[in-house]
Length: 225
Image 1 (cartoon, one colour):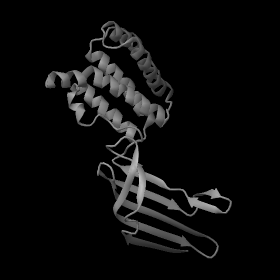
Image 2 (cartoon, rainbow, N blue to C red; image 1 turned 135 degrees about the vertical axis):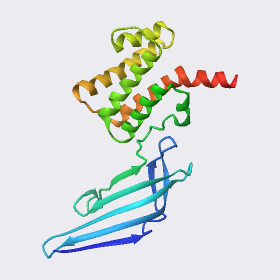
Image 3 (cartoon, helix red, strand yellow; image 1 turned 45 degrees about the vertical axis):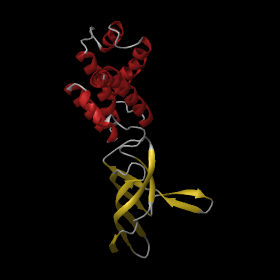
Image 4 (cartoon, helix red, strand yellow; image 1 turned 180 degrees about the vertical axis):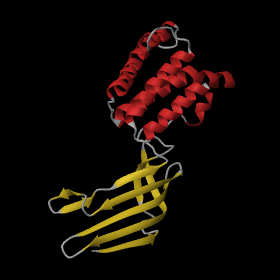
């Protein structure tokens, strides 16, 4: 069986791909600034197999942030796009890891108490690293940490969230939404249940609004006024 590997410099340079941006909200066009593109093949008269892996430095055409993309495909993994036309399935990894729709608080995390900031950073990392069970547990842990930091009373998280309403920190409507995240975290912790990227992204957005309302905006107002 013969085997051949080629290393091609900048073969995919100049290509554009729609990717989740590290800083922008949602997907944006990214341009390949430089690449090392590997092409391989092996086989004999009865069977042949081809594969490719592109290692690309990419730049968001909006905010200009630079990151890294690895894209792989092979001749056995393809799907039909018309009656007689096929496309190879592409496996994609992005560095830093990210998830579509999750932007993060960025530099605003310095307004958070250190224990809240640590749990937030760990949860964001789990979410961006495609670890849905750990991310959901982290979201619940964030709620626990905020309740503890605000001295919420109660024997369990349900009671503590309700006590934040009593203290005027949350509205009843806000508490009802946070109870859904509490349930999401419970399912992850006790049933090892993974939730979808869309559910987790929405849950993180809700938690980030909570952190802004409770910690970030009051500190910013105090600083500016």
